[in-house]
Image (cartoon, rainbow, N blue to C red; front, side):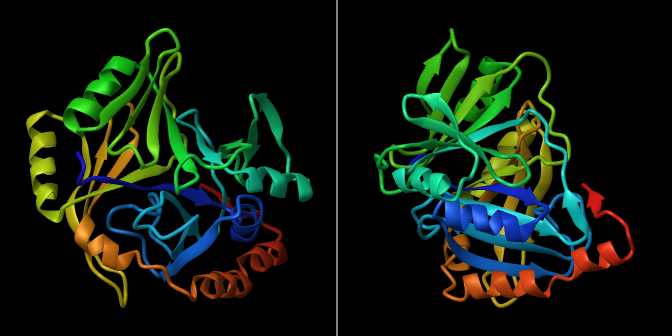
Length: 298
């Protein structure tokens, strides 16, 4: 479906300073916008938490034409348990490989010019030591599935993604909404998919008028809807409509109305400063240290 876009993947982070260093200094991404919230999100954007949290969008360019990452930080939570659900993001960037070497950031060579590295918190990234084949260096997000054919039926037949590659022998498939967009790779694993507490969420946009049709389709097909169609407010910015779904393995999927999201997601030239100010103003580490208590684990 040409009118749908791959937008971003949501990560929970426990240490904003270290995480910002990784995305800015190693991957070479830019802070596109930063927002602070006093209460939990109605669509559980920050996970199942009710308190103060923040959202930072980082990427190689504007959200209109780049796949980015959304870093959610819940004040008072220092770490999350990773499952086997998220298998990595692949980025084509010779500069990122060079940055990692200069900063002595751990790299593991996988062969064919591909290096595995990890963001703070343990999320995997695969860096290709080459120039990107498209304007956006982020090539694909890889998720684990327990039954490839069942997942393909969901993502392709219900959500309308095009199957670009399918390998029965390797039990993997590559899907997407457009040739020049970040792709979704599904890879079958033995046993059940475990999301633990560090689970993320992948987001797409579609014309706002399609959201109710999508909700109706999922109801007819008896598919899981985690958050029915709802409006989300961001102070001083556009109100967007979203619906949150879950695929057969419980991967969270957000669809947002494209028109309002384009307005909401404009690059904020103050994004870097807002993030740095929030990090310097966050005294939770010092408070927990003074109380001789560890931060909570999500």
